[in-house]
Figure (cartoon, one colour):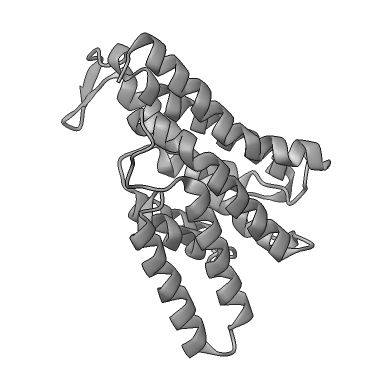
Length: 239
């Protein structure tokens, strides 16, 4: 189980609770992108940064990805079938891609791939770390090769996202180093650092998401919300 800097009595979030935090903050992030024309009003300046509602909401949205990396690493440790887990990621990567492109460009032309591809590559990467831990040369080749693939595919968050998944898994017993890795790779200032308090509230329990229906509802949410936000943007703002 993932280590925490908090004593057990304060660890009140299950894996299901963390999924909700990640889903909600992701929705806030993508809603800000969708409604950017309405969110550009200047609010205040701090550390030479001009804050607008758009910037603040995108900051909240930065919480999501480190939590998804965390949940992926935990899922790898506890899944009954790594092959089925990987196939689920790849299937939803393919399903989500047209909606991801429409959301970002209004067309099917886009040179980046959605975050499910990043998660799938990260899953393969931590699988290589686990499978070849006694064969460091093979492990290094596999990890580096998958990193190159993540760059060639231009998967969401790029090689930094892929590397963060590996480091989240490898640093499970060192939560402070985990946080340092996330902030270093994904940037500071920003909301990334605020993902880690949520992770430290994790109690190791699965939570309410137990049935296959609920499990895949979280997967379906990604392409579904991109489709809805694309339609909203198209109707009110055009492309």
